[in-house]
Image (spheres, rainbow, N blue to C red):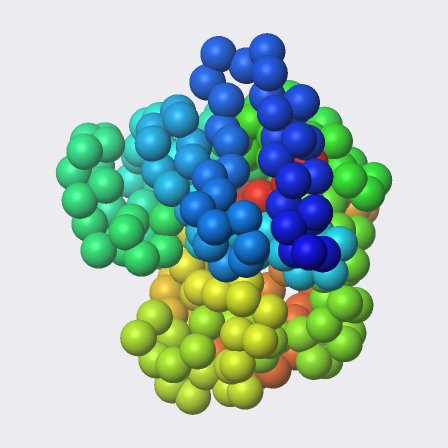
Length: 246
């Protein structure tokens, strides 16, 4: 009964937040009894994502794949929106979507791609929809910390967030249990015009800026660590995105 009531509340929130949107992105519920049966459809491109409730938050359990355009690694900018697929060097969206890396790890985005308005946020919730589907938003770093704290803190959360096994992670994928259902993936990063760390490291944007250069805080997990790490990167960098429900 508790799960049933929770799902009804979730559905009501989505309908409320998307009612005036020409391309709403509702949660699809098949059973009304189990969060694991719920999915999110992004009607911008009809991608369907698994979602998971962790504590008081609902997260995408897959990396975002929205890809309106694509460029190669030599196109980096801190002021122009760019979208990338790991190891793809071209501008053909269909070709990029046909790659194994797109299907496994999704899309890599720079700051202006995830957040066209450019305004950061430290709030919970962040209030920044950005690249996310309607009814969902980009997490502030405080929202990432809420997730980590629910899973026992930064020293414990990494293994509970990582997908198990070595299909998508390189060995040893230390202490990966995926206890949370988040299924964290090591989609790598675009750094100095090079794609690096695929299968070794997962980096995920927040929309929280820090320091005089307004670098952006990101959450990082590694194949040889059980903890999560807090790092800051320049806005020309590109990495993966997980959205959280409004």
